[in-house]
Length: 164
Image 1 (spheres, one colour):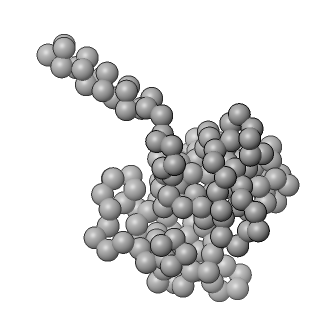
Image 2 (cartoon, rainbow, N blue to C red):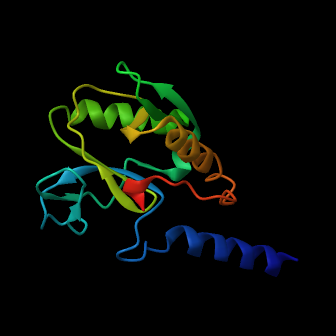
C-alpha cells in the first residue's frame, strides 16, 4: 500500500513539474508581453488585429486552472462579452500584475490561440474577454469554459469563427 501511494505521489509530482510542450498553447494563458529574445520570452505570436507579433512571458499570470466560472455580460454598446470569474488568489495575482504593468501590454491566449494583447489601463482583478461576439457565440464560449475545470469538453464545440 505504501509503495502504491508513493508511486501515485511520484506520478503526480512528475505531471505537475513536466515542462509544457513547446509550441502547444494552453486553453487560457494571460502573460505579460516581453521583448522577443528576452530569456523569459516565448515564441512570437500573431495576435489578430495587431500589426506586429508579440512574445509572452513563459510564466503566465493566469491559466485555465485559475478560472472559477464564466458569465455573459453586455458592454456599453450592447455587445456581448464573456467575463471570467477567477479564484481569489488568481484575482489578486492579476490585480498585482496589472498594477505593476499599467501602460504595457498583456497577452491573452484562449483555446490555444492568440486572442488579444490589450494595453493595461488600470489594475484589474477580473478578466473580460471582449471581441466581436454575437450573443450566441459568447454563450457557447462561456458554456465551454464551464467545462475546463472538469476536464470534459462540451458535446458541441464553441463555434467562434476567430478562434477556428
